[in-house]
Picture 1 (tube, one colour):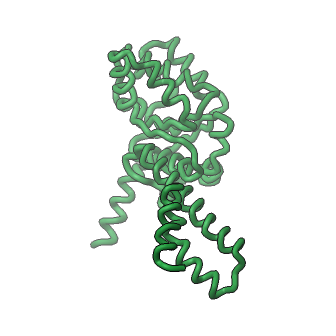
Picture 2 (cartoon, helix red, strand yellow):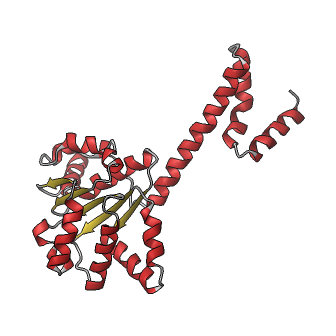
Picture 3 (cartoon, one colour):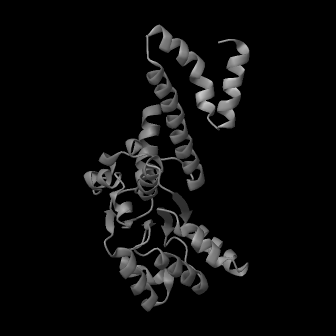
Length: 253
């Protein structure tokens, strides 16, 4: 085909919003000719390239919209450094079956043991499977909820996030909340009960959650909803971050 014909094909493909097909159709045509592929095989190959690229773009867009503070993966987590953590259970959670069942994951442990790493890695796996994810710190979520309430947009915000398959709430318990903030967080978490999954990381045992929420009745009601059909991972031991830093310094000496 001449240059004018190729230009027309590229124009049509771009109008059809098939940029990857426009990029590969010509080199793939030459490859098809060299390998004696049928028109159907060639056309199927071009379409597969377009679909694969679209899937990749959608996943990358989902990862950006999740607003992870940093990308973490299970492959980069040293399970040997945290022997109290059930590796097989974590790997099973990476299948995201708990999200399909609207179940929660709660990671409990002291600072530095790897809770945020595991939470982020599980949420990242959900993104890779095409699920809609959002990452918050507990303090950041409460600030957003209070701002939305002040602007009379709280219902809009709750409706927006009701479509998310998974919400991560990191660092629950590190900072005490005001009573209005605690009530808004309770309302937000309750609204997702059996409708969408949560991953929560906390440095507080459940018996100490009243230190954050103040109200015993509200705390009991929240725990009842969060722990129902939840996967609870208790992580004990020395600081994972400290061990990593120590190992890094030792290797560079």
